[in-house]
Amino acid sequence: MFTMKEQFNKDGYIIIKNFFSKEEINKIYTEARSLFALQIERVLGKKVDINDRDTFEQAMFDLFEADFTTFVNTGKQAQHLISLHHLGTDPKIINVLKDLGYEFPMIGVRPAMQFNSRYLSKGGSHWKLGAHQDWRTGQGSLDSIVMWFPMVDCGADLGALQIVPASHTIGLLKADTSGYLGSIQEAIPEEDYVQTQFEVGDLLVFSAFLVHRSGENITKNIRWSIQLRYNNMAEPTFKERGFPMPYIYKPEENLVTPDFPKKEQLEEVFA
Ligand SMILES: O=C(O)CCC(=O)C(=O)O
Image 1 (cartoon, rainbow, N blue to C red):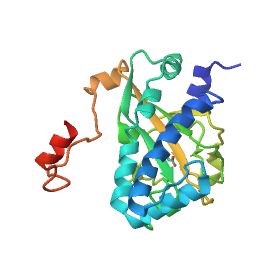
Image 2 (cartoon, rainbow, N blue to C red; image 1 turned 90 degrees about the horizontal axis):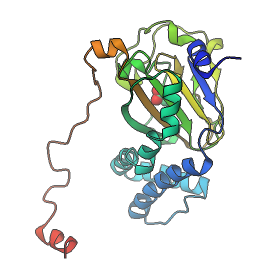
Image 3 (cartoon, rainbow, N blue to C red; image 1 turned 90 degrees about the vertical axis):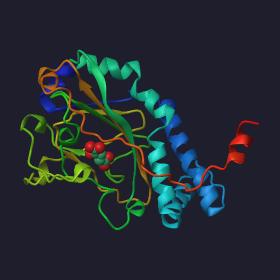
C-alpha cells in the first residue's frame, strides 16, 4: 500500500474522492452563475434561473454572442470571487501540500475558473487546451502542484482532463511558446492518455510537469472547473533562481469608461 506521497511521486498525480463537500463547491458555482446572470439580465433583458441548467447555459451563449466584451469581463471578474479564493487557502488544501512534502506552501498564481464550451469560443480552439505541462507557464518550484476539479459532475463527455501518468519525470518537453495555449510539439501516443472522471467534490492533484490536455466536451453543456496552483518556496532551485514570477498583472493605462464618473454620481453614492 502506497502513501499518498509515494503514489504521487510515482504517477505524478492523485485523485482524491469527496475531498470537498458538494456544498462548498456549489457555493462557488452558484456565485459564478449569479455573476453572469446579472449581465444576462442587463444585456439580454431577461431574468434566468441559474438552476435551470440548459436554459441558463443557453443564456450564457446568448450573452457571449450579444456582448462579447461584457462576457469576457464577467469571466475575468469571476476569477475574483471571494468564495473561490477562500477555497484556495483552505487548511485541507495546505495539509495535502504538506503531506506531499511542501515545507513552505505558497499560492503560485491566482485561482482560475474555466467555463469550457465550443459555444463560448469565437471559432478558435482555446476552449480546449492541447497537451502541455503547466510548469512552462508557472516556472515555479520543481515540485509545483496543480489542483483541478469540476463544479459539475464531469467525465469524458463533458471533456474532463486527460493525463499522461508518470510523465512528470520525463523533463520539460518542447512546446510552442504562446502562453496557456502553447502545446507540446513532441508526439505523445494517444494510448498514453488516461481520461479522468469526477463527481462534484473530487479533486485531481498533479505535478506541474505532468503532461495533460483538455478532454473533448461533446455536450451542449458548459464544463465549469477550477484550477489552483501552488509553489514550495523552500525548494532549493526555486530559491536559487530568485523566485521568478512570470505572470503579468497590471492595470489599464486609460479610463475604460471615458468621462466617468460624474461628480453627482459620487455625491449620490455617499449621500
Ligand atoms: O481544464 C482544461 O480543459 C485545461 C486546464 C489545464 O490544462 C490547465 O489549466 O493547465
